[in-house]
Length: 192
Ligand SMILES: [Zn+2]
Ligand SMILES: [Zn+2]
Image (tube, rainbow, N blue to C red; front, side, top):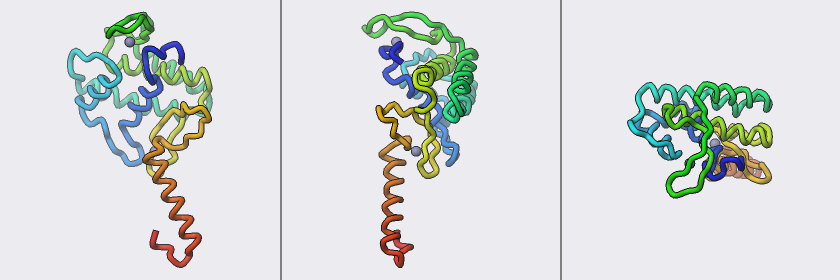
């Protein structure tokens, strides 16, 4: 992970952010069109010379289940194999560069390849850095009610169970609180 700390502020976020543009439980599409894809790409620092095409959108959407599979991988060998397959399919090209007044640093995607390919390479490398350093224990699928979004737990004590402590975490503690109240007041079961 140290290898590209200066390149990607948060390398694990690439995979998370793309996978979570679709909620598989609620069937919510958060990347409905090429403009939404352009936002995602630009947010992660990929330069766009032209707007993404419908084909780029299809490609980006197809990457979601492929990356999600890594979060569900039973062991690290499976995860690494899946990620190597993504790398192999998307033209990686390690090279050093500097831009925006910053120092020389490593980029791993071919800057001449389509933007979604560049995204795929960076997303895969971000997860590979985590998996090869610490195994799959940091890759999670949120246990929140009707959520199942993915996240990488980079916290020191690896205690996260929810994609967002503010949303799924709060919802779960509110539900637990209601459950406790019900136990205390068994005759008011339906008021929670
Ligand atoms: Zn850079
Ligand atoms: Zn969640």
